[in-house]
Image (cartoon, rainbow, N blue to C red; front, side, top):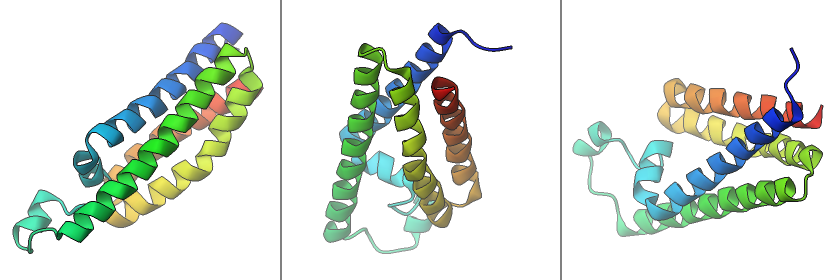
Length: 136
């Protein structure tokens, strides 16, 4: 069963909203986002180790700011493509973003393990399917 173009449009807008939401979360709560991504040690790991240095904290917050800017810019571009009634461009941008998602999944796997990485991987696969649907 094929989905209607209006359904694909709404699914594309859900991806745009997801990017905006992730960017806003990362920008407004960089420490919490950093902990979720493994940039900061988990509570169990940090209990036996020294406090996080000020320099590491600054670097982590800067990294979260870069991720926030990336996600916000992609989300805004997706909304702009929707406004221009360009579903093919939306799909292309979503699929291009899979390179970033793959890098995110890899690094989260290295820092947090397969549980968190698989969660991100399922989300990325869903977005990939939406991107393909918008192009096709």
